[in-house]
Image (cartoon, rainbow, N blue to C red; front, side):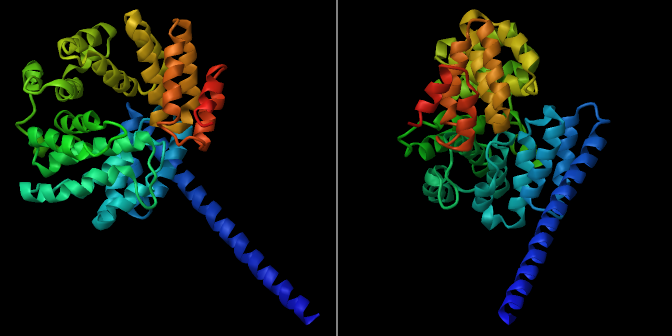
Length: 393
């Protein structure tokens, strides 16, 4: 009988602590949800809400973790579907987390949420680690072996193809920091640190990151880094012509902010990318800019439909395909919207191109056999669903 009483008391104690744990968990979730509601209310009065969210959500981290700040972001996104593209926010949150202990920047990368904010989190950790650190050539040479394998994963981080690409893109940004924005040295560094990867060539993705640093600085330090090194609009072609092949293609494509008003129209984009035809980079220009434009349209399917539908027939299919894959690259929760965009493409007789793209991204964005992989495959219509599932068989 005495033993039964002891067992009963232990059970009561466990029950009390379990309920307390659940209560504190729910209270924590509730507090983050309440914080998100306050941000939503404050930003509702702004003319462009996403910029307001980019400013307000990081304030969570004055007393909370990066993970909690991203959870607030999820709550905001559930109530405002125009904020799924939060790449800049991802930069900021991981940069703040890295700043707490710069030596743990790799751990921050491993903790970054997958399939959210277009993987901006990975960029932020890299940039915070190397932002203010230009290095002499001898130290850069010593650093190269570490950079050559860093994007291939390690303890606690098994990156998808997309995450590897995002990482190599971040290395492009990093190369500009450590060379003090010497673009020639940066692209050479990109070539060297990607050369050891024999499975896939990520060099141009790295070039993109280096040139992006010139044309899209974010922080005051970024502007100071490239001051006097950025060409004017009328100088872009001559500036990029000092490079050849993929380097020139990356330079031109990343220079799109100088031609923003032109590239957001079908006719303007055709003219913009035609400049790269003789260099064999015209197709690449379209591929890169279709991703850019989808984000600039805030993933608005109607704007994407009007834009892609206004292109020449031979470019239309790739436009819908890239826009659709950009949806799930931005956030894995956008699978249904991604597949719906391919259905729209089918109405323009280019649905096959769009669905084929999603098959590729099913095992590039996601690990084969993962929950998100099955979510995408099962959302596709036949016969694409079966083809998708067969990629894991």
